[in-house]
Image 1 (spheres, rainbow, N blue to C red):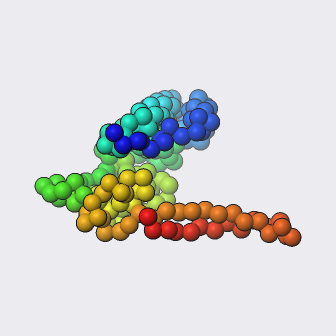
Image 2: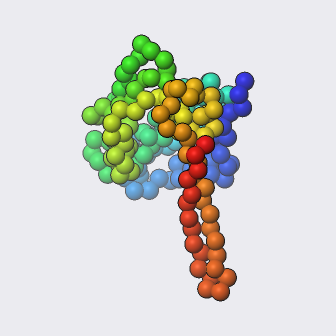
Image 3: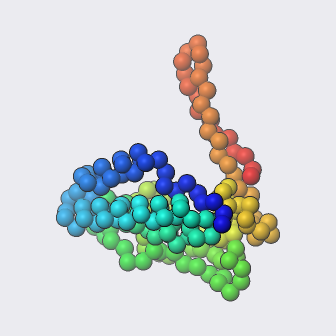
Amino acid sequence: MTPGLDLGGDASIWRQIRAVRSSPSGFAGLTDERRETFGAELEQSEQPFDAAGAVGYEAQALPLFYALSQAGRAIMAMSSKDDWKTSSHGMRAKQLDGSVCDVELQNQKKGLFISVADEIRSSGLVEAVRLGDVLAGIPEVSSTVPRAAAVSPALLLRRRATADRSSGVVRRSTQLESH
């Protein structure tokens, strides 16, 4: 078994999320339905995140998908939109007859993925993306993806903060490194 990602995160982060869950603000607190959805979806996202962190990479996909789906539904309960409920995940897979790395993922016009992307002001997937490229972009799993399956190597983001002692100004920079 390959060691899994540390998906449980810092326990203090989950404590903060639980505190928000118990007294939601904004649109999540407007109606009983939104409040109940918000709380239940956040709780149901924590459990599969913990489960995914306890298994190897080969078994993480399903609990991570479920965890992210539940977190997305909580985000939508906070949304100012009247149509905050979604009935599908909003992704489409193509090229299913070849290698797993050749499967293409694409936005659908409706669904959770595009709704959350819109809510957080992200473009989502502008065009179809190959699953092999997505996997190759994750440093923790990129070494398990066949080289021929990936178009681009994983990139690591390294953040640095330096302080100018004379002025006290802190400068932050981000450096990309090929993995």
